[in-house]
Image (tube, rainbow, N blue to C red; front, side):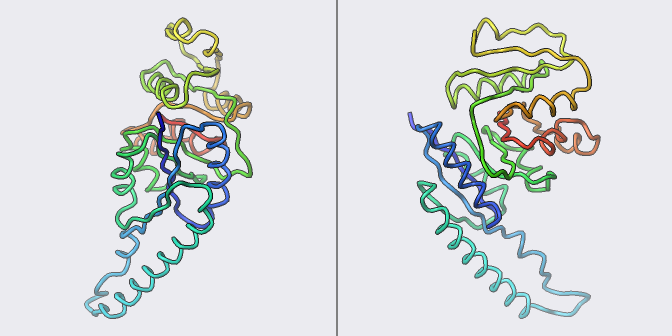
Length: 251
């Protein structure tokens, strides 16, 4: 059965990384169709108020908005021309980025987008409300998808991520890192040689960052509604996403 992945393209700066990852992804997972989406985010236009301290600027703001829309259309055409050989379909939508992504995701199995060094408002909201698996990409010169590490805290979210990963990509070798986890592991019998457990004791963030350097892809549980709390409190779920320079699959 063919599966579909939706790449979200935000700017010209992302094109090189997206093209490189899509090439590697297609070579490894030949039963996936890849589409790309560029959103003309209407929230950008709202920074121009109709009045400032009672002075009407409707004519000027309307002109600026039209100029901005034209620039957005030119950006899309440029990106489409550069990505043409990497995707089956490349399309543009106008609206709020998060809402458009969630609506379009109904027809796809996975959402794929680039992440920066910090989690901004747009990505924070996606992490909070996404309902399908997603892959977060750091901007790298090259990618591999062979060695996979699951970050398992013994909870249900990491378990769901592993099953979603196998459901999308088939069963293959996954190393499972557990740091300071006492709960009994229930999956070795289920997945056999494809499931290799690594138990560690110590500082979770340091151990995870060190171990992740040896892998191509990292699997972790969804943050969902905890993302805002984690950002405020500094818990390491968000810090892992910001610091790991490998593709991260979140189920």
